[in-house]
Length: 445
Ligand SMILES: Nc1ncnc2c1ncn2[C@@H]1O[C@H](COP(=O)(O)OP(=O)(O)OP(=O)(O)O)[C@@H](O)[C@H]1O
Ligand SMILES: [Mg+2]
Image (cartoon, rainbow, N blue to C red; front, top):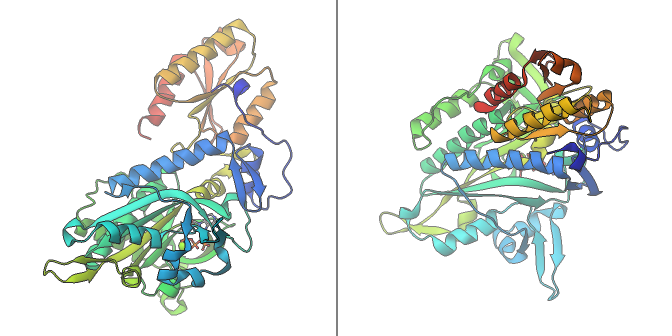
């Protein structure tokens, strides 16, 4: 992409409506534009990161054996009456009437619809286990939409649903989700800690929320600082291996880590004092085992091995895809702008031409652009006739992890400069070396 052709409406001034840094930076970097309270348009730069995050979620879900599908955003109220949630959901549900005066709604989540699909097509235990998921827009008419995409009314969410014959199988599905989520967040450069959470009206204590520690988080959390030393890394995992998934689940959830809803002072006090932490966190996902709540209410049964009908054991598992953009920025920025982790960066490297119009500088930039593109990478080339200072400020604001700076003076000595957005460190090298280095950096990502 060439900056001269890109639609990147950056703002010079801090927008007054943004109370937290991620919202401010997303507006300033031309990623989103509010259309009404809690509802946003995703401009090209924001949309690109959203897609990257979505791609990672898809890849990791499918590695875990879960199947992607898509359900409608507008649903009939009938199924929700069957489960009892049409009345229970309250004012957060956006209710709509169609021209025939039928009650419709914009989906805040999709347990009812997926259970209906399941019961229509699956009748034998032999078709289990089954986990289906989608990444789809949701709407919740939040009382206080705020913080940009972090608490929107319309938001993009991955929601997955498992159907299993037994509680044991459903808990394996729960563990599979926990493991796949750990991998998902790590690939985005995030540490998201699974914390025991409140199951709310659903009951049971099998639910964990994934929280990213940040001062601006809406949840109060309590944890043993040893949980922040845990990383999943690139270990091999067999998602069909129940014991392996169980042991990873235990590794990541045994140490004390809870949200305020389940916090227990007495248990917390058993953690050595120097490791007790109270902080704030952003909820970026939640996994849930709820047994036969929906299968009972909606009569979703399969024939068991003994020929008798059994209500299936279910769980649901969500990731806040659009909220993640905000969470990542909260966790990774400085006073100049965003610092994208390599796994989600909209463009792999920026090319800054210090003297647009200079024959040699232009040619060197074109060559870098060509070679990076040929290597399967996406550079963003700032080819505008602007001051170097302005170009640097824009690059810093939009946060590409690597910048290659090209100018006539360096080229005289055969070098360009490769700069890390995170450390600010610059190294001179030949253009060919710069391409090789950037290729190397992304080879593992
Ligand atoms: N209003 C929202 N805007 C953006 N993302 C959201 C919003 N509500 C929920 N999410 C994301 O979707 C994920 C799954 O939804 P879930 O039903 O668990 O949300 P929730 O527990 O009601 O969220 P919260 O407690 O923040 O309101 C959440 O973990 C969160 O990351
Ligand atoms: Mg939740």
